[in-house]
Length: 110
DNA sequence: CAGGTGACATGAG
DNA sequence: ACTCATGCCACCT
Image (cartoon, rainbow, N blue to C red; front, side, top):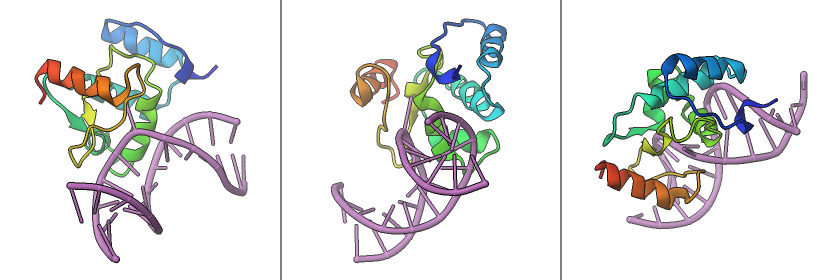
């Protein structure tokens, strides 16, 4: 069973971690999601920044790979992660990058 | 074990 | 400012 195909709803951190383990996620995947979860409303971070913060400074591309299959949307605010050059980046959830932009605007991140 | 893939980054043209 | 090529990394098949 692949972790990427199981949508899960979790509100507390302990439950979130438990769910991650249950899904058999790697340490890297868990680290990425937990880091993204820390981004405050109205704020944004870059893929590169996330990679650096979890101790894999060159794995920024892999960060995108993890978010692409984010099983915890919208509990993990992955829409707050944008590209280093300031462009919006992609968004796999319904509505695509367009919806991503709208979310950021509604949160006051722009 | 050997390719292939992609919500990226960066530099060159 | 825009496009293209190359480098990177973790994960999948």
